Image (cartoon, rainbow, N blue to C red):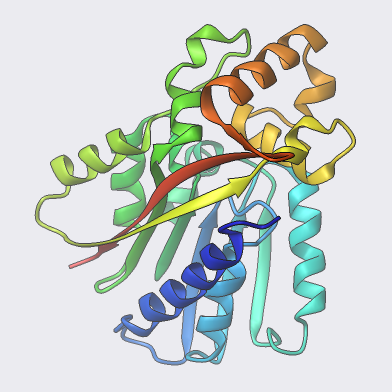
Length: 263
């Protein structure tokens, strides 16, 4: 069962359209986008669809360290080739920290998207400030984070697991934004979702393994870490972060879209 996933996708679609509609940039034809940690493009597609309805020339830069999800993103682009004909994509197979340290701070973007990727910023405050400085007047920094729910529990108790995690809780990211960017205009959109993660416990499920990779910040974590470590993580996730309904394993979460406008 999909539970709240269809509702979540509808909300993401509507929120993307409303957000892009609010853009008041100097150019109404050409726009530059940076998407951080885009994974397979599930979240990006809603922004791209909204962008092509408003702009004729779209430069879309993707920074994502995992090649598997990027291949899925490229297939998504192929399946939308006609509608997205005005979009020029470029891909950087690296994390945002490496991108910025390698000279990315000199690049300029009208919109920067970070959907469930800000947790992994090495230095949250410095990275947020760098990204904000890359925007023009009326540009937008869009950060989607989980502020409560199953994954938040998993990350906050990661010290109990053998796999080392670097994670900044969503609540802390929100606090840092409010503390260090008090003069900016910030909009917040909140939504609750129930996710079926049953396939995380199927070792042959591509979808489930992609979720595990995201949770543990390791590509192909099932095969790159000792089996006992992986089983310990799965056991903790199932018992402490999820609940069962019939044959399904579920977890709830609340995410927030924090939209920062450049003055």
